Length: 297
Ligand code: GLY
Image (cartoon, rainbow, N blue to C red; front, side, top):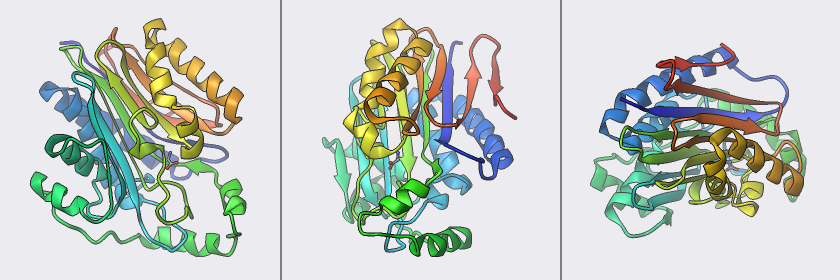
């Protein structure tokens, strides 16, 4: 049975915080995704992303960063390449598994982007309980340190940001159906209500059965300006490696370095990644060797 899946746990510059734990968790996320791929690529990407949301070591789910008021506001999206159906959630505060809330929006509404408190009504149709999202002590400590550095436009804080955490996954199942999912707490100290690429189809993710699937991480504003995941998906006919590199070349030329990383899968089950930051954290299932690869472990 042919299958492919690649996940990422964010990109950035400088030293990677908690590198070992993150790499271990990425490997496990791939295992969960590959287990779920029997039920299709959408199940696979949801399983991988919700595992990373649960782990608490990435900027998503339980590990999410805080906005300038010290609140958690999650963005996430999921897309099924078989039928162009996909949906995103923005400023989600109803459940830490924002990717599952996005899936509920995809399943139970005709909308592609829903934000705010009434997400609760959609989430409960999937059996998701309303949760109070509380930051960990570690996240609260980081907030305290950053708060002293806020200026009016937040540019001072943004320039200090070293790691752009998002978690994401793309997969291709044995029916050659691609899917993509992404989830994040967004950017540290973002303005309350700010929406990043991860909520928006074509920006944070894209999947199309005639092309493949793609997912981005990095500075949401730049990713949106470049419609990065849609642009990358349109290049997948050249093979996922060339496509990922070209997409990163494009965003680097237009928006500068240290702006983004991407992962992708083409219809030949080839996964790839590229980035213009110092690092990107990735792991994948290699269809040829039939095993999970965590490159830097
Ligand atoms: N890429 C995550 C964000 O900017 O929200």
